[in-house]
Amino acid sequence: MIRLRTRQTPRTTSQRWLGRTCIGTAWVALLLAAITPPHGTGFTLCWFNHLTNAQCPGCGMTRSLSCALRGMFAESSSYHPFGIAVLLLFMATAGFSLLPKHMREQVREFIDSRSRFFNTSYLVFVIVFVTFGFISTFSELGWHF
Image (cartoon, rainbow, N blue to C red; front, top):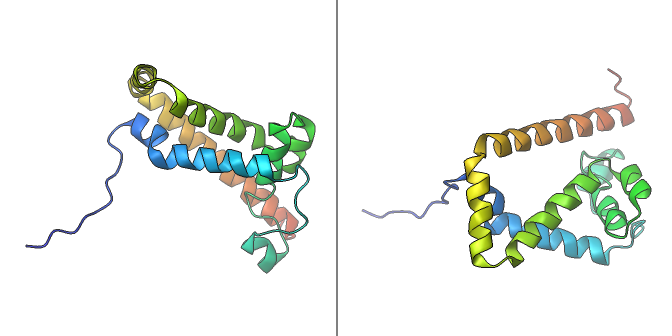
């Protein structure tokens, strides 16, 4: 019998929040925010924007992160209202990866002991982020609620 290797789902909340994928994403996002000019590069890579001429739910996030990283908080909020919160989350996740092993284990235990809080917070954040994005996108397209 041939057994195919399948992607394993995280077993604990801390594995989901602080796994390699999240840590890698946090470092790449911070690097991108650091090298991107605060007011953008003058062109967009957003395929949704190219197709519709409207902003997607994440449009402005890179510029928002770049501004927030440089302490330009008003500009950050104007590009994307979730930018500062996402930057703090990325900084905390990246910072976690730099902790000594025993401290990382303490953080993991803390998160796992409060898994309902962390999972609920994540779900609420995603719902609010997507709802905000859809409302702003549809209002830009002329669909009013």
